[in-house]
Image 1 (cartoon, rainbow, N blue to C red):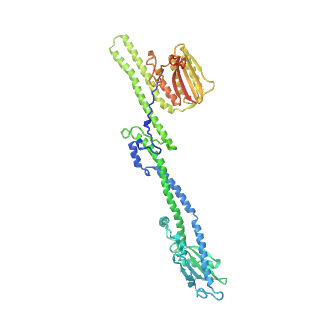
Image 2: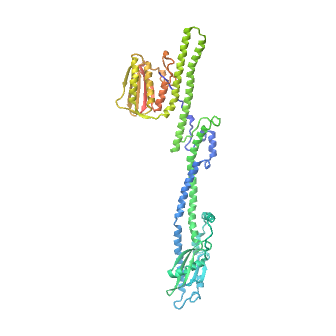
Image 3: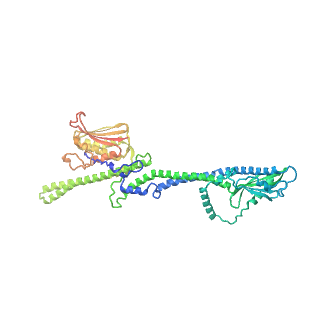
Length: 570
């Protein structure tokens, strides 16, 4: 049975090329181009993957900035610096008072005996917003003054508090609004005037010396105050208290936070931009691949002819998207090859079935007109022969059509190829010897294990050996031998039959092709070698046929027989 198989048409044009990131306009369908145009580069609504990338990047950035603001030590550092400066400033003012006290005699701040507190305070230059209070030992306010803006060097310390803090102020406004809605005002004590809060520090300063404390004024701003005693002849005669400008520390902290938030805004914009670029290199190619597949899927539902599925070529990308594009293109190519093969197979089946059907129709028509019994018997023999031919043809076609699905479903296993060939040789050798054919085997002693479907490969070798037996006559010989060659194993089936016509060597593996004597016409479907080739190629192997000649130098010499070679990976 010198059978045949149909060559598969390679249609590389069905899987259209593209560029590295997205398929160019000329390689995609008009509908895919329209979808890409509607999607746009910055479309977030139609790309969940883009939204996820941006969200995750922003969450990481927000957590980082929140941690910086939470752990930022600038407020504590500013507090310590300003507290120290305020205490030193209060001590200097106290030294000014002590320098004006007489060396002997009595001093009273209340009546101005020995010193004029009001005049002394008026002669002291203070930075804008700073307030000085002078109390006697009983807590009575003797004098007070407040610094005004002079535009000089003393006001340089307030420059930071004058800087714009739009982001911090906006966040503070939102926070206070939300906090005001959630927090109840019941139970809150009214804030004392600044003078009363400073008066409370007098006794602490008389006992412990210089004191620094943070208080809240009536406007809600944080005020740092320092209190230090005025000493005369070893005794305290009063207390000088100095209060920083209202909200000075808060303004400085806001200024520092504003710088962090400004950097956060810049980083936020950069992160969003980079996320969109990253998403465009991931989401857009994936969207093109998905939409190309969807166009092919939805073609039948729209009752339209979608044509070939055109998968964008992203194989130049050295990442998983490139691998996905390569896999999809290979899958689509294999799918269309399978469709083309099935179409050709269906056409060949129709053609092969028509021949016996035409013969049957002719025989039946002639049978109606024939009167002689001997002629009727001959026509009945023809009809019976054609029926058997149709039955054999339909059975072989059914087996061939199921082969692809079965090769995919069945699980490959490791088995000893030589053990399988030994069992086949034992069974088929008896059949050959019964017909007067010498059956010779030459197999290695060492096992050769391969990965595959043992039953299917056995079908291949059974077909090759029975093929050889059918072409041999009494006195001919068949030789089956195997050799391992590096990472492959060769199994050869040789016979001393009539050989294969040279013009048929390239056709024997085509479906429905059969090169047999006239007396054997109709006894074979012409699918055996085609099925064998399909099984071998599914295992990653090769199969070919050649003639055995007396010498390879003389290709015109008569062949001594036929040789079929099967190469399988080990």
